[in-house]
Image (cartoon, rainbow, N blue to C red; front, side, top):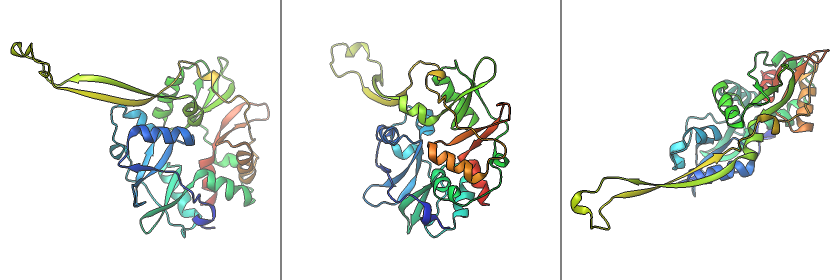
Length: 277
């Protein structure tokens, strides 16, 4: 199976020259955490811009500065295993598909799981690829703190536990971006102070007007946003069956539970790509 067999051909992308605000609006509209960036009028790939980068640099407005240009790419003719290797090595969930320097598609973790793994009858237990050690948050944790924990742990989803330590939900970055409000603020910066002799001059102060666009999160606990109805698997559930459950329920991770419903670990869709190698 090749990249062209599962990739998404119709790609939404940001362009440079462009602004941070335009990228945020597109990410929010598509409900994704990263998008390709191309040169306007040419379609030549520049790189990728991520929600995390935009949150980490709220003062920077020029999209060209925020783009990650060092991203791996694949060709439509590459074997699917090549894309899986790139994704697992870098952690990038989306790979640009490039032909003759131009962006012709993207291949995502979801593409591989839904269009390949779900149909390959792979009987190996999905629990072979689970994350046994995962960061978790308490259900009363404020949403902004959850974003910081995700960033520090370098994860896109977190299990949510109650005061007894029981698993009660999962929160991922798509849940958060749906709630985020795009806010534009402006402030005036005085470049130099005026002297005594300038007191009667209207134009004696050099000012610049700074406009900043950022995502604002509501001050609510994670329990008000998290997904409560969890799709879980056991240690014996196969890779392909796990992929099918992810496809049927449009989810990116599933908890692994013991026979007495104890939380054992988390299987992410990206983890399942290891079954191709």
